[in-house]
Length: 248
Image (tube, rainbow, N blue to C red; front, side, top):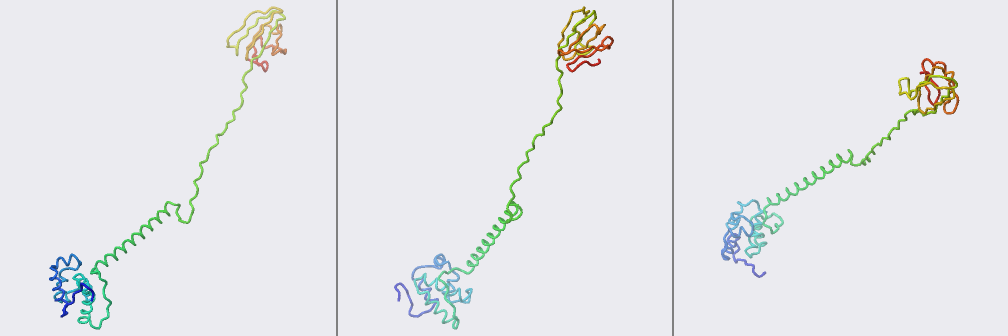
């Protein structure tokens, strides 16, 4: 027999438990705090009122826990209970935990809730990946379309020919009154007077207006080439440019 294990000569379940407790100076409150078995269940074991306990399975567990705590042989008390109250039943002994089934149910419920929470998180991640990843988890996201750079359109403007300054020379072969203005008849006057035979004047401008009383008494050159003054020079004048003589 193991040391420290007390077995009374007359083996009464409830009486031996109570005597062992009182011998050690313990009250039911202390035993409840140490074994986690409620004091009313401990008292029911000492009074052998097993019908007030939840079920035979829990009675065996409480007996084992209570007896082991008092230094008794818990398995011996379970065997005695089986022989008296559950004869013919072949039930495996409970683990020496003294933990009520309600606690196990709470643990199982927590495991279920944790599993459901994990499934919800995974589902939310899949939905988020589908929503923000292009509409399909298996469909690769298309690369961003590069911005189109507009090539500036070159507008070709028609070339404008700027007037070119020309050298115009008048030489008198006979007397003639001559007027010369810049640009047009209303332009700035640069010469007015009678030219005598042998006299000449040279003008340099982009555009000249010339009038003469006797155009036949004048010889003209434009850019070193001889040009003939028309007869209308006497009445309305003529416009002289680098390209030639034009009506005014």
